[in-house]
Image (cartoon, rainbow, N blue to C red; front, side, top):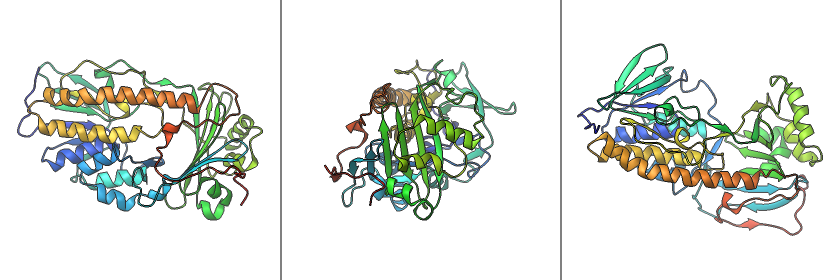
Length: 397
């Protein structure tokens, strides 16, 4: 059934991540009311994760649409577009740096981006501590939202921006995330330039990766001297079987055994981190993932196209959010708006998810080969490339 948008349409967004928030921002800019439901207790209730490179053809397009691009630039770190790539002996293979004035994909902390988006919304837009448990499409084309605690509310449009384990997705699709075969473990370093100079040297101003076969180590510089590490390897989801993940030293020993023979400077990533290790198994949605139209319900971001974290997921979520808001603003009915939005978003999501899986297979092959292969698609040729024939180990100054 085609539902004409009323003078004051009732729109709900499940999830206060970047995609949902930019959608809410663009809607409010055009006088369309919206309510965002978020299970977190408040804006500062948990860490929002590491750093994001915001691409000029996706995420930046969305921020321009939201009228927030200049404020984003003031917070972003263009210098952190730098990439350093090593083999397991800590020999520098490639060093990419952005050229002067290059703003093709500057970095910003996830928390800073979320705060920027939250601050741009009308007070009370986000209902904190109100998680969406399920949605029920109704015969007249509206949607009943089931909230934690038993409360129900009815809306003309419900947008699932609630990530990998979306509670909105089942109204459209039976697809569930599946384990990708790649384990990921997160670690942290604070005040890195003073307390961890070796780590600071490895990561430089941006991102560092070292790999051999089915094992990789990543470092990402965040703001305020903070660095996040990601230990990634092919293996079973229960690689930690028999371990208490809260036992940091036991986890450290298990990980060190995985990276036996790697250079000592790289092993410091596993030995010198502060705090516990955080297990983050990598899940993806099946490709292709699509659905038949259900009146009044749609998805964006990871809820629609969860893919390996190779630099496009958050950017697509931002673009999805902005384009969905524009579709709602520009069409007389919910169905027309969703036709316009999904006809672009679904094939784009499938294309990018396919590419991301191919890149993950190249980055993390199921082989013990010592060759450090880095797909060129990971980084556009947007600046000087330092590739010295006489490259030295990372710990040599």
